Amino acid sequence: MSTFAPENELEKKLIQAQNGEIEGEAFLKEMLDLQVFMPILEKHTIAGFQDSKQATPLSFKDDDGAEMIILFTSPERAKEFVKDHPGYEGGLLEDFKWVMEKVGGGYGIILNPGFDVGLELAANMVDVLTKQH
Image (cartoon, rainbow, N blue to C red; front, side, top):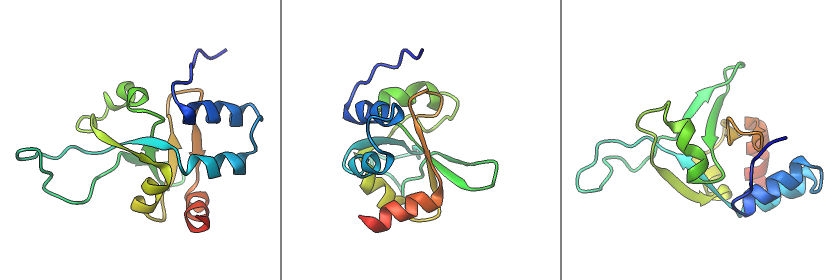
């Protein structure tokens, strides 16, 4: 059995959804207003200013060639994963809905890769969620 101890509201809801205590659609609607952590590429900055207004999120292509954005339920959950991705130690902590709106269409989402408590949404699912809300 997993030793994943929930540390925030999103993690509690995610565990409830995975245990069948919350219906998937209801969970996704609640998740829209909860914060996620998105690792972003730290570009060389001058006095703390980024040279670009567009953040580059950590992403990769899945087996089908679809682009997947990596998100975590908290910055602490990302620490081990980003060790293998130099430059992505920093990131943004924002509402899931805001992240989806900023990322735009055509991307899937993987939440908490490497943990038993996580979520994977295909790009078409992300697009549907974004359009509904």
